[in-house]
Length: 124
Image 1 (tube, rainbow, N blue to C red):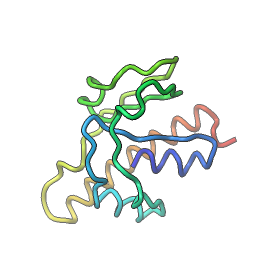
Image 2 (cartoon, rainbow, N blue to C red):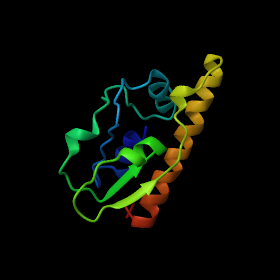
Image 3 (cartoon, rainbow, N blue to C red):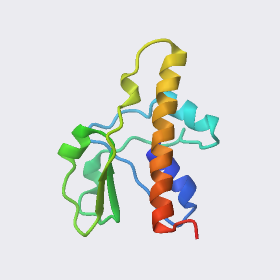
């Protein structure tokens, strides 16, 4: 979801990549809740962080404690941010409850991305 928001709102001014310590399939609920707000991530692929080794980034953002602790070193002076956001994939209950958990996380990520863009004046 973070990659989807970053690239959607960055509109070609930035290029965002998403990767994980243990990549899995893109969760169908993530695809559904992003589609609700007009962002299609259905073609996104889960990638291993190792494919980006040696790359330089302006920002490195981790979304869970495990990622923060296991994120490899990247060269350069990247701003490192950590957003301790609960993984909605662990949500249980009815489909509506699971969707609500994904919507909550979606909205947190969206707000965090937009805060960075406002601070960096990416919209100008």
